Image 1 (cartoon, rainbow, N blue to C red):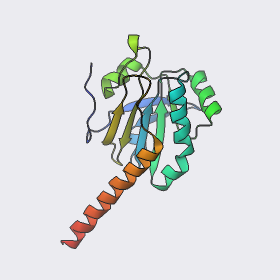
Image 2 (image 1 turned 135 degrees about the vertical axis):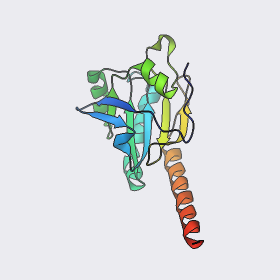
Image 3 (image 1 turned 135 degrees about the horizontal axis):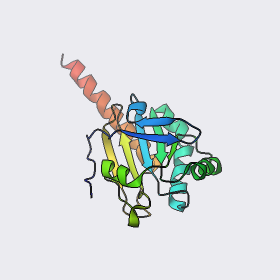
Length: 170
């Protein structure tokens, strides 16, 4: 078992194939924005579908505070494409993730027999460092949009306050 990533760790380099074509390199392609990286169990998981749909509905609110969203699973391309269409997902969705390799790099829990990744969520800062991580060992326990939006607003306010304090002391 690999160790879980900790707050402050740089998210490991991970390149994923995207529904609709192309690839996304995490964290490099997300640099300059806060980011949410979601590992979901598969299109068959109702909890995952609810989470992905909720994040898609929150996309505009996230864009206002500079948060990008990306999700990935072990599902194949056609299955992932069908899920994106069904849920009208409005953010990049990766497919064909190698569960064992992703788990080794990130500490995500694997399902019995390494068939898929358990739900895992990361909130990254603009440099790709982990602000918080939520690791689930089963079907439930995952990031929710309202918590993420509030958390990023808090982090940004703290950052702005510290910059203002430094400027005042000069």
